[in-house]
Image 1 (cartoon, rainbow, N blue to C red):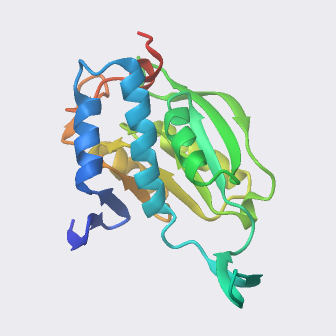
Image 2: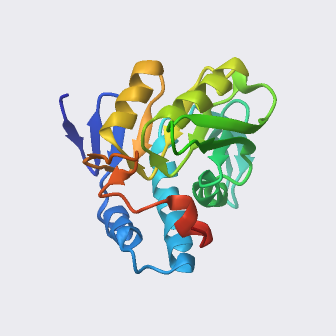
Length: 220
């Protein structure tokens, strides 16, 4: 797989790794097992805004007439319907909160999935998304792209609901999960802060940062 460097970003086919020094520094704090829950949540929210900046880089623009204090002008503004953010529960909410601070007008949806720890397959328990997904950019968010099974199912559901312009945003990806998602949905770009080494025998990312949901909410 070829790698090209573009400023602060590393692009591998449909994968973009946001390698900005602040992102990588904050990610190291999150990886540290001694980082408290409240700090973990806050840093995740901060990193999500860096990731959101990159994943929305190519939003379509148009112009509209406005008046500045000095004159009238045709000013740039976002075109089309508001984008949709879809959180893959429960851990996706940690990324969602930060992105909403950056894009407060976005529509929001939720997909409830949990992983069967024996089969490593996702089990769906909830699905609620905005209307007219076919007319919106849809950004699915989940901190960890591990096996890729949950991400694959979530995007299956979004496409069934009409979405045709989907991007996936995560904090850390494993090569196995990236391959799984890329094979199932080659049209879905992935933006992440890190591509880690591998999965362990129980499907956790190595070196990773543990279970993002547990660390975010202080559960075990």
